[in-house]
Structure formats: structure tokens, C-alpha cells
Length: 329
Image 1: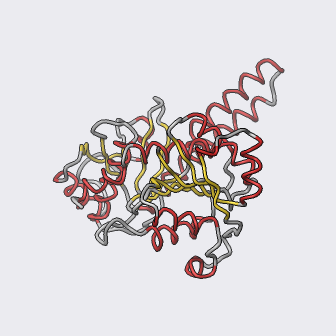
Image 2: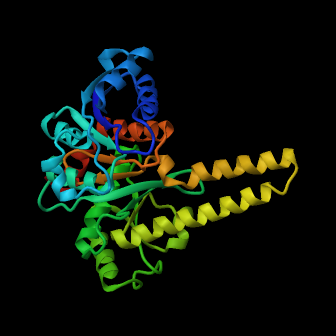
């Protein structure tokens, strides 16, 4: 069985609503077992009512919720009964648990991952990666998308390695890696980017050179390597551009008669699902001993299903072992 832990508290929607996504994932994968963290009585009643086999899950009672107002550094000591802390502790103590999913407070999840689950090695700086969809429908991984704002060149190379291992675990053979810069030429970029380019050429990766932000959605890349500052700016810019276009389409649809209006609204919905990375499953923290998938606070049951799919795939395809191979650990 592939075992993962899912924290259902801390998001905007109720734990019972998000549980629907877990149930769908269990029904979808016959070899999936889920440790579900939240309010035990509520969740078990819902699971029993839905007829889910008790052989496929275990509910761990963890009714406390961590909020964005909590001091992340105080969380481990003061919130031991919180679903996020219990989930991270389960990942640390149970070798069979292959991944951890949570839609709770970002800062708390990062701290819990670093100090409870812990990095794979002191030499590895964990990286936050996310996927979005290119125009041709293929997925691309952005590493880093916001965890490490200011990085030396060797860290960017390590992000590229973890991003490559991630896409390999997702089924991409020999992932193509590109480096985010202000020009495709090797001579473009800051001193750090130029150094990273030179190091990536020497790394055991399928490195194809630099890429500009304007080319990302039509590129041949499977992985975009960058520091967290530039990666986050790129991600938010792509989101903003897509949302603006979608709003324009919706506004235009409101000026049309019913049949044409429906067509344009349908197009807007399709584009939203295509370009909103949160609907693809959020972000994944790599470089800790178990992959941690961070869902958006506004997650729905559909989002949870997507996130659990990612967690299941990464655990089943031994992502952590692939990262260890990249770093000879």
C-alpha cells in the first residue's frame, strides 16, 4: 500500500467538504492508504456514511488548528495537538508514510517540515516547487517558486536537480532543464545567473540553457530553475496575466446573448483551470525527508483530490530516493 498523511484543517472550507477529495482519491487508487488528520468523530462518521472501507484509512484525532497569526517558531512547542504538527510527526516517525498534504498556514507548514520532518541532508537547502501547464498541455515545474529569495549559484543548481527528480517521479523521462534569465544567451543575466549557467553545464542534468519569462509557456522545458524571488515574481505574473484575460472574456460574455454568452463563459472556465496553478495542486516542498504538498487555503474537494494524486504519485515513484541519487546521499 502507498501511505500518505492528509491534514484537513486550516483551510477556508470545512474538513468534511475537503474529505470528499480524499474519498475520491481512495476510490481512484486501490493501493492508497490515507492517514486523515482532523476531528476524529466528525471524520469517522462521514467516512462511515460514505461506506469507505476502514482498511483504506485511519483517522488521527488532531482538532487544533494553526492559523497565520500563530508564531511559526512557537508552534512545535505550543500546538502539539494540532493536525499539522501531528501530521509532520507521523511522517517523521512512520517510515511507511510517503508524503504529507496540508492546506494550513504556509509559514507553519514550512517550519514544521524543516524542524520535525527535517532536511534530507545538511548540504541540501529545501526548495518549493510548483507545476503549471504550458500552452501545449504539458506540465512544467518551477523551482524555486518562493522559499529561498536570495540564492548563490550552487543553490540554484541544487534546485534544478530536485526539480528534475520531481518531474522524473511524475513520469517525465530525462527532464529538460532551463535557467530563468533576462535573455536566452549564456552571457545574459546577473553574475549569479551566469555562474549558475556554467555550473549547470557541468552538472549531470539535461540542461538546455537559459530561458526568458516570456517564453516559459511555449518552451521545451520540463523544469525552470531559479531563485525563489524571481520564481515567485514569474509565477504571480503568469497568474495575473491569465486572470486578467479570463476577466476580459467574462466581461465580454456579459454583453452577449445567451447561446454565445455560454460559450465564452465555458472558455473562461477552461482557461482558469488551465492556468491557475492552485487547481493543479499547489506547491511541493522538496529536500526534506518526505515530500510536503502545500495546498491553497481556498482549496476545494477537487483541489484536495489533485493534491492527493500528486502525493500518491511521488510516494509510489520514490521521489525521495531519486533526490538522494541526484546528491549521492
